[in-house]
Image 1 (cartoon, helix red, strand yellow):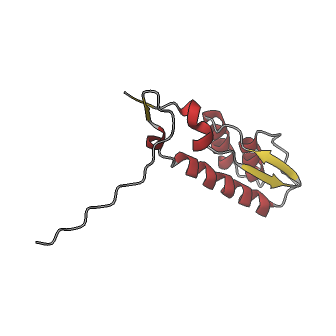
Image 2 (image 1 turned 120 degrees about the vertical axis):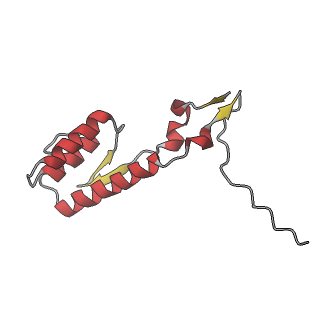
Image 3 (image 1 turned 90 degrees about the vertical axis):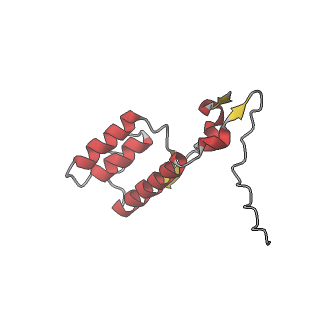
Amino acid sequence: MPKLNLDEFSDKLFEPITITIGGREYTVPKVTAEVLDKLTSAAKEEKSTSLCRQLSDILGVDKNAFNKTDIRQIVAAIRFISDNITKGMEADPKNFIVAGENTSPQSSTPSPAPSPSMT
């Protein structure tokens, strides 16, 4: 029976996302429904600090942590994180389905198409 253990392969499916901003390195923690709710809430605000708050929420730091950071860096960081979160969502779990005791990821390389025969 095919089995998918995302806990076992999460490091391969969802690599850590790390950014450096303002001389400090940050790693994006788990992206949970709670984090997404906070992002949605911050995006609805019509304040100039809403982007700063979004980045703070993504990184799990104080909501005012980036209020004095260049907004271009904030936007670039959010875009980088968003792009990499999306890449993780595109990971094909079929590559990690295992049968029985085999725990190594299966290759998803397609077989070459047969060449047309000449008759």
